[in-house]
Image (cartoon, rainbow, N blue to C red):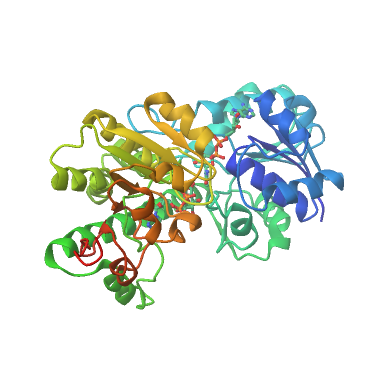
Length: 442
Ligand SMILES: NC(=O)C1=CN([C@@H]2O[C@H](COP(=O)(O)OP(=O)(O)OC[C@H]3O[C@@H](n4cnc5c(N)ncnc54)[C@H](O)[C@@H]3O)[C@@H](O)[C@H]2O)C=CC1
Ligand SMILES: O=C(O)[C@H]1O[C@H](OP(=O)(O)OP(=O)(O)OC[C@H]2O[C@@H](n3ccc(=O)[nH]c3=O)[C@H](O)[C@@H]2O)[C@H](O)[C@@H](O)[C@@H]1O
């Protein structure tokens, strides 16, 4: 059955949720306080890069099921369900900043004139939905009924639309069966298995899932560090481990650690959450420490080889925190660039999509190129920090053609060692033996 829905926040989660819910037949209004974003959206342009999103958005704007506004009152008019999808960034102490969520709760209380179900998609610490209920109750101006449902989001950036249509599960946490059933019905056309539980368990499923995935990454990165010292190859090790279904082959890619807007902040928030109830989450604290060391790994390696990087021209290939996104939040490239700045290197950066966002973070502390050839030109060293398809497919003989010296530190294991060995390239990767330039090829 078609429902009238409002989605508050048009970031990676809110916009994708709004667009996909409209695509399965609901009438959706997306609300954001950012005038610029709403202006763009009204023109059918997506403010974020996410494969397939803009096309789907245009389709549903044109069929009249998807609208945008900055005005909460207009946005909430006659809506049966309101999704909260605003940011929950980390505060200085690592805990989640809930000010945006609380603000939306107040916006809802002051503007609704009908019964609604408030669904929290934002990642929020256990107990937050109870707080949301309380804030709404305290600020409510109409005599209406408000139910609260936790419905955490599991999409990944870069494949967000695909993940929304083909997710592994939809988690619905509620203490009211009618509200839970309504949210289940809304999602039925997706055909994804539903897990119904209480609100606090739903909130915890989200943090525990992200923390577990982060743990897998730090685990494989530690194994890769040991492989390097013992002469084993992490690719073969991960493959051999992953064939065991109990382990699974996903999230076993060793590299320069996890970044992005979620794993770093959600792992820290869970450590804080545990600390608040006097539980020291030793394992997750180690996962975070391992990741911090791993992000610095390429530069440390290069320093080991060169002694000093002062005055070297360094090319960074890939700036986004992962391929297929323009998101630069907590990207390993930023850690690398900042370390290289300290070392006194000259830095050039390239990314196919994230250059504009990178400029906002790194400013003029580095130079920018809009193609791979240009970023490699005259470089002494290349660091690969994001495995964009175009970087993975870059022909290996071109490194020696463009660089002053073809020395590559690959943080994402983009190339097979057998292929590298066929070219004039010095190549250091993660958890695999280094390849040196043979005299025959130089
Ligand atoms: N980015 C991701 O891949 C995923 C994010 N999440 C969670 O979803 C939440 C949202 O994340 P993103 O979409 O990345 O955030 P984002 O930062 O991209 O977008 C948040 C949006 O909310 C808007 N906003 C803030 N206060 C508002 C208000 N009072 N009324 C209307 N709009 C308001 C902002 O202007 C912004 O456009 C976070 O809790 C995050 O942890 C969960 C799964 C995946
Ligand atoms: O809560 C969230 O925001 C989301 O966080 C992650 O999604 P995302 O951060 O978009 O991207 P991932 O594909 O999970 O990658 C995260 C980081 O881990 C790194 N990674 C991933 C996998 C791997 O094997 N190795 C590895 O180093 C990536 O390079 C990237 O920096 C989760 O995968 C989503 O399920 C979740 O909804």
